[in-house]
Image (cartoon, rainbow, N blue to C red):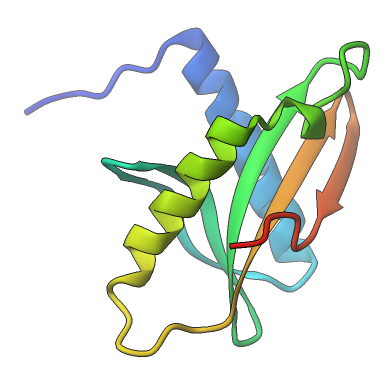
Length: 119
């Protein structure tokens, strides 16, 4: 059986994703899926906020010296997120209401940015 070994950077990323998951759960969202991957891209967290399906990108930076976590989301990353979300949505007969959120972690500061990407 294969064992998945994460690099130290990947392990740290998973820790931040788990922190973001807990943060969002405490604010009433329900977890649907973690680390959804497809050929087109990856989505860190998929959550439900009432009837709305929420695709969440988690970004972390030690500080805001170079613009911070939220500023690190490039147009190419946005395209990959949208592509992965479109692929994920193929499983639904009727597309539910959706939005893209970002959990930006700068040092110890957590910021939840809702509906930040238009599809």
